[in-house]
Length: 393
Image (cartoon, rainbow, N blue to C red; front, top):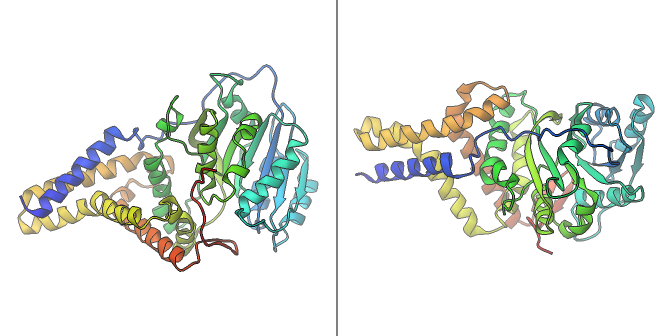
């Protein structure tokens, strides 16, 4: 066989393994567990870190204030040194909309060794703990919740004990309106699930840990045992770090796709999506050039080789390369279809997954370049030159 044929066969082998052996990552059936209502609804404190969020707050914050929750609940919004009037807008929205009580606090600039979001969470959680809540809902300022979202999250967590969860997290449905969002966003969740198969995350005794930072319901006792957020204060990928800390402390976690929780943040341009991915991509690789090189080779074999083998093998008269490449491309596209269906997108986007994978590969390389230039992870005017992906301390 030709070298191209061997590469194509290797890619097909990898895709068969991904289809059957990677926790069925491509399935989208991990949804919020359905449990009966508790005898007593526990108290909940909702903590919202917000930095320059005046654009999205009029949509997201009223949805939190309007939660139909039978127990005690209140919202703590941490205005992280915003320059667009986020705090004042939050107070005005609370006066206009009513609903759950709202407290707005401004902690000032983060101390050395803290990322901005976790510094904000530290102050919000400290304020919330004065009320002694049984649960903490950590939710981003761009996340809109249906009125029964909090009720369903708490019910899904269940009673404390062997059958209950210490952390329940939902991957909010991201916005898919622009052409670039349709091309890139479903693939973002697809790739995340490939790295952290939801079924493995949710399995008892599993070592795989992950969460979606936009919507995390955390049992207050579990947060104290895991020393959240102090134990992950440098984390750029804070959601995965949080889940690992909770699991290491003996907590049980659950992660799934949301049906009634949506991100309202727009990413209309490729540049917007590029920045969203590249700011933390190299941190995911623990800033390792070796892992970066392996990622480049791996993505090339898994996503680029199949269409190249098919489109090159056919005119070259190489039936093995063409057939193996075509089969691998078909399996790849087939595993992407459930995610496209979840996002209500055209199935014609499935064959374009190799192109999208190349975009993500370039974003990752750019993330490494920015890191080695000393720019590190940049977000909303702050730069973390040497961030940690998931510190053990």
